[in-house]
View (spheres, rainbow, N blue to C red):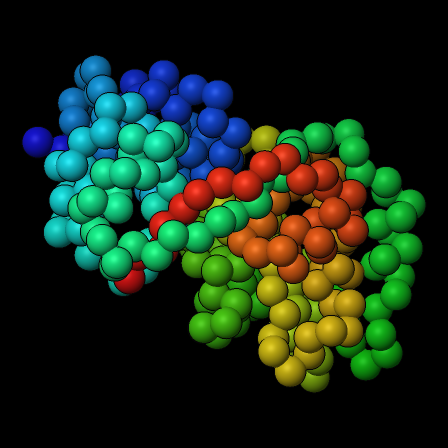
Length: 253
């Protein structure tokens, strides 16, 4: 049997030393869920938050079967803690699970150069407006497919106001670029950043990212970054982050 853990911290030992804030969110009970093969002493577990699912402990095929049959997600990124979990994912899903490489970024709270970040913010091109996400913009973003992830993991604006944060560039009142919290944990956020296709290559993502980092620093929060691709990694490094390592994941539709 697979259970949703009512006390997610009971799976903490299985995810020990995994520097992934989405897992921390689940273990802290801020958002997301932990599933395991026991309510009290799980030996196998998965942490699920949004489109991401992390597997730790003893590789257990029943957990993968539960994910496939019970949770009904259209798309999920599977992240194994080790090679044994990777082998089980490949054996269980075959070609349905597309292997990809992602780029982990070092978590260095004191690495940012505030003056440099502010100089980036000051380069906002004429005709654009930079603003933080308020309640009307929160709801507006949730209605737009391309930027829904800036707000979609929060139950409502009250939850976002408490745990989340986002900087958005507007053109004629419409969001065209932004950096926001995909998820939150105690002490920080996980950054989600994107620019609408017709406004790319204008430096807007860099401006939004710089603004979001500055606002996080003002609150005493850490803006964690995980890069999906080399472009995201290059942007992170431009903003002051440092590359840590590549890791294997699987995209499952």
